[in-house]
Image (tube, rainbow, N blue to C red; front, side, top):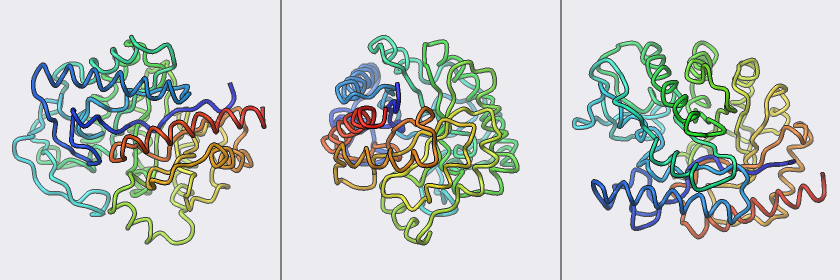
Length: 340
């Protein structure tokens, strides 16, 4: 199939699970009730994507309070009881984060509940997203390792354990989310891609890395205004990423100031092109989606092009997210009819 569709990862949570339209929203339930609610929300997220014609679905990150900390909660050596305030993405915004206080190791499976529930209830390809090593260490305070690179590789090894288990659950694609790759360009070249490859080592399923300019929240919107008329961060990191073993790269294209020609650097990769703007409540039309796909095709071969969302939709109103997914599915169908 040309132009298969997917989403970056997260979708809004139902209001009975967590406070809507908010990142880091606390859960409204506890214990067994919370686990059952997470499972139910996962199935609803899958159904929403199927109804919209999404080809490669995710579990919508419904069982995670935050895309990074949802992974950290099942790791020994992390103190969640004594959070500290820390600047994230070079102090773009502040957040209360847990601390690494001892050697890191998994307590057991992290995402089995939602991965297995999604796999059982959809016949479509299933993508599962996890945070990448560099983004994790940029979202947690180190009080043990004293070396961010050493800590990143420790997290990469834990990620590798979990993603191999996810592959065994029947997941078809593992996507590592690395928004930090757009901030620490020197580190990406020096060790970031190597840590990412460590996290993906041994996987036989498809692999992807999602590198974006962030959720549609004020801190990210304000930062984007400082980047000028062209966002050229990818120009510094794409050559290294293109040489890596990671097979796909997800980037934002809709209402983006990223020069389309930069995507041509990714000669060996499948490009997941963001054709849905998650920083705006304006719902794209199928024609809008088609036009973005058509523009990306100028530098990306059509058999290497997947249509996706710019970033996650966790903070978005559910009715807006659902309408945008419908346009994504319809726009890709339009592209197949006109360009296939």
